[in-house]
Image 1 (cartoon, rainbow, N blue to C red):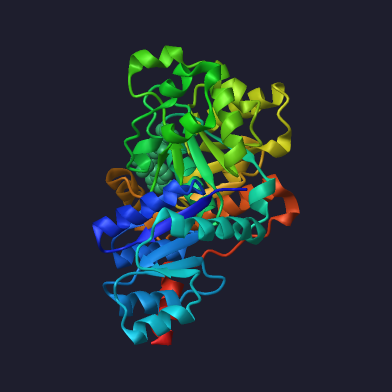
Image 2 (cartoon, rainbow, N blue to C red):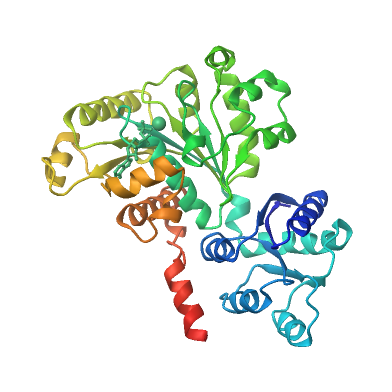
Length: 396
Ligand SMILES: Nc1ncnc2c1ncn2[C@@H]1O[C@H](COP(=O)(O)OP(=O)(O)O)[C@@H](O)[C@H]1O
Ligand SMILES: [Mg+2]
């Protein structure tokens, strides 16, 4: 049975930590995130597809109840609690049909509920069981936005309710963790040290978790550790990650070494990110030729033109002529939004909601589903914060 994305909301740090420890102790959750402020809760409920939620109604119960009542169905499974026992609060809480009302969320009390959430999570999202896909994102040269696209694509796939891990294969100067503002205590070097004895338990502790739920296996932090990472270590890690994640997004360096080539053998789709300048496009053509020589099927290789500027020197038509193929997607340039993301370690979902780049990245996530899952993958709707706010306001 798959594990759960479970969130804990409380304004009280002790309750937050007790509830999340209790949830972890049940062994049923893959990821518990603690949230302490209402705006963050609102944002998470609007963007992430979470399996279950514990909400402590002791403080700001009125606002919390309004927020929970405004959630469209199917709602995530709710477990409510807290010290506010006022009859109107309890009555409204019960109308939300929570699995339970726990004044103290202990592991013993949470366990049976998490068990039942786990069974229904699989039923709600059958894709979760049956697809495991690896996407390699590779740039034509440094600075074209490979890491940015890889991380944002991961975030967008996660917003569709999928479990996603980013693996940074830039062994020198990898920066995927930075894009998520994470400082992982473990890296691929620690994974390599385990050799073939690597197991899921260790791997799970080695991958860092962003608040949105995306996981990140970062590259080594020490230059001297690069040499100890071999292609077989990466293959073993990918094999184990495939068991737990619907999507593995590889952030590849533009110069492919043995590790990259062996990893490319295992991927379902290769997304070549490029720019509208001649050197970048030339390198993309070389990468396309190389992949063709290696026997990569044409429908596994895609070209993404990033930072496309309609007023730039090359038109979309000239681009296609140069590449001798249509690009699969054009991602517009938006320096203000992108630099805000990079410099603040934030995702588009935090700074660029509804913007042009985010729209293109969502399109890329939908296309990735179609490329991997075929026609069966209909684009799914992500509720924007704005539309959720509108619903919220309309009710009041
Ligand atoms: N669509 C875009 N519009 C504007 N700037 C972008 C866009 N995509 C990426 N960037 C910027 O390009 C720079 C390099 O991105 P990065 O992903 O680190 O490149 P790479 O991994 O290819 O070396 C970053 O500063 C990022 O903000
Ligand atoms: Mg990069």
